[in-house]
Length: 330
Image (cartoon, rainbow, N blue to C red; front, side):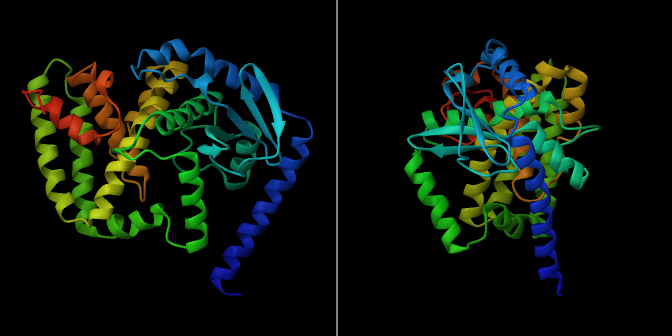
């Protein structure tokens, strides 16, 4: 048996093992723990409002918890059981009929996955996947539903029909995923990777700059922007656009996620999970969660009201350059 076939066998066996565990728990319905997670997430609405994203309300979107066999959909004070809209191991915003929904695995499903693989890199810091992390994930994916429902990302409005068509086309074509494509076009090119790692260090330095020293913060932002502009010129157009889009959508959602986690767990846990590894380079899309998140934090310092006019039509760097210069006019 060659390595590729062996790998496929192991993945198949692993999936069957997990599915057998999830089917057993599915018959019991949605657990009180999952119900409590959703209820506590909704109760954070007033505090999340303080972040400043106008009209962003968790209860506007159905939240489906998938247990391996069924979806349990929380919406408008009810919980309804249905056939799954998407069998998923991870959280996502997904088109269902004429709207976008939040879909996350149940806590039991995540625990089953963790018990088999011993934790997933990037998901855990010093312990089991927690209630707080699940609440933060729900808010993260709800922010994607908010983006898709209300805005044209970089000027392009994506409907539920558009997304379904794109997903079907991607499945049929067998083309590389965006994750695979970014690995090939960025991560495997040592020169680009090295420059991006340097930029991430600048962003972390900016986040850690004394809050009272705005001139120093502006200086770091300016130098960062100059370095980034030079690197982007070395990249294919498609790679540049993918980076800008991923930072914009995932970076802002990660910012919301981190803020919710901070509300739930306090400053020390927030710092350990989200700030200490801010410059950690991750292959594929993961690094852009961090760079986009860092830019949101910097914007909070430069212009606390930046979200009042933020509509996702411009990349975060355009907004950063605007407020990073002494002349705030574009």
